[in-house]
Length: 254
Image (cartoon, one colour):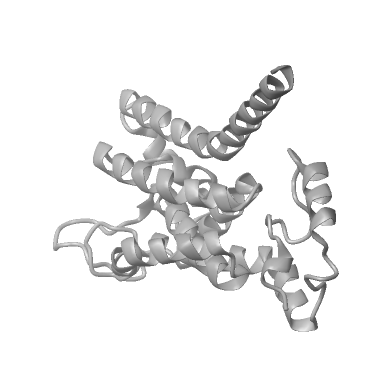
């Protein structure tokens, strides 16, 4: 009975640790977005006027860091919250290095947007201003979506492919439209920048796996199951090595 009780406690402890590791890194940036939104309202929208990203402007460089934390309205924040929870949660389930992936998407999408962002073309109604000051987490949200789909194609893991198909069918059409300059007041270049970042990060973090497939790296026979289990147990709670993704190469290497 004592051994059984210890086993249940160990399972419960592992499950709790897994939940914390998976979802706390997703929720913390989201909490910061909500806090900053209400603080900004209290300060007369000062954050959005001072910390937004303005393309090709030296003063707008600060927006690379702060833009995903800022939102123009409650509806804007709520929409990004739902997508962040779903797509960010999926990304966190795919890799133990969610924070690294998120930071790379965050900074790379902001840098790309700073280079290519509107107002190259203005589709706002006559008398209205173009999207000059970019705010919102949608750059990172689009990054999550593009990362999941690209990673599914490159890694060829069951869970990744399942998530990739879900994202393609549920979000695909709306996100493709969001990357076109057809909706007034929407930062379509921000969405496009996020997608570019997602594809790039997926390629960077699966570099080793793709190289092993090309060169015919370790085979299933060479990677015995007992050795894999021992390696995983030693790495529990630690970051994975290699390409930064939690990949069991033997599942898809010939």
